[in-house]
Picture 1 (tube, helix red, strand yellow):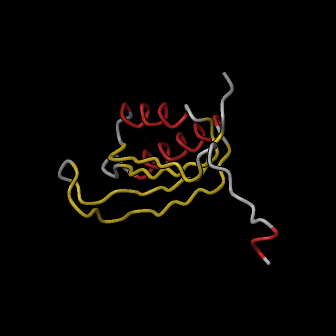
Picture 2: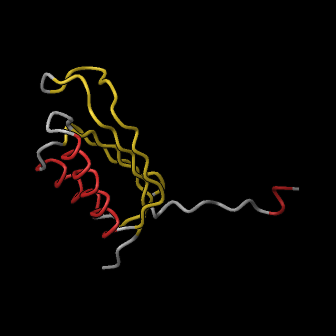
Length: 112
């Protein structure tokens, strides 16, 4: 079965309680994981931010936003790894452009 690539956006929050070195190691670990399974189009570390509500009695976390192109089965695996990794407070992945939705080119007659 052929694997199709799509554009994804993932945001995750890293726990700062273990220190900056541990936080940097986790961010690098996930950057490497995404790069191994897809193509990173942008990587934006928002840094330390206050949370809207406490998570496990913590009010701050380190935010990272990643945009990448990957096979359709990768986000599920990435989510599984986020869930079993100590130090990841929250994560969310959305499909920015599914592989089956092609951008329609305007018809020349419609443009005139």
